Amino acid sequence: MSEENGAVNSVAEAIEKNMDILSNSVTWFADNQDLIIGYALNIIFAICTLVIGMMVARFVAGTLHKILGKRGFDSTIVDFVTRMVRYVIVAFVIIASLSKLGVETTSFVAIIGAAGLAVGLALQGSLSNFASGILIIALRPFKAGEYIEAAGTAGVVESVQIFSTTLTSPDNKFVVVPNSAILGGNIINYSRKPTRRIDLIIGVSYNADLAQTKAVLESVLNNTKGILPKPEPTIAVAELADSSVNLVVRPWVNGPDYWPIRFELMESIKNALDEAGIEIPYPQMDVHMDK
Image (cartoon, rainbow, N blue to C red; front, side):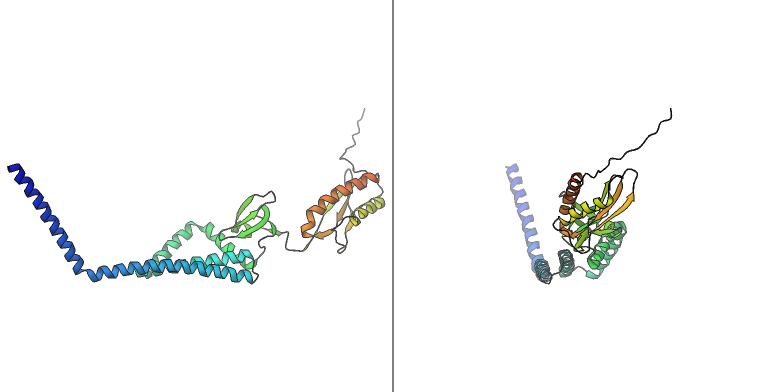
């Protein structure tokens, strides 16, 4: 019986203790009702501000993208500007949400500034890429769809992003080049001008008749479609080399026709010289031996 009485007393004490805790909790909630409601409302407002702000940032960025696209701006500029606008709006939305939670935004901004300085010192290369990206957008040495050569690589520009520029190489490789590397070196834009000049060097034998050779080369150019009449093609002797007389053949073509016409000319010139009996010599050397 003593053991049963002890168990009953323990249960009674536990129930009484829990009732005291529940009573204290109810009393605390009753005394701090206004504070709890205020915090709950602030949390709700902060969440609503964050959600609505994200939606506004997405809407503004999308609208700006459509407007700039209709105005005829380059796609690289449109993408860059819309991303920057969206990031700025999101940053303000986050700060506004924190202020709703009672966070002191002035000190928060100071902390962000100090952290930004430390991160900036650690990420000097990334900041250089960022600044170079802004300069590329402002100066516009190239735009999307143009074929360029820069930073030791070449390809068609896909987009200019915040820290890098993406290219597609002629063999369909995806190339990412840091913006600072592009802006820090030479940029060759093959697509900016509407026309290009094909530069060919044709070597013939020293025994060849140069007048006949020029006539054959001129005939090939006249019979090749896509070569522009103006500026007039240039056919001239460029060098008296060790084993051949080198002539330059320089016709002008439209930019997109450059490679097809170049390949066609190389084949046509070889066939025309063979038909005319004009030799394209191999590199050779005469050796005289003393007996």
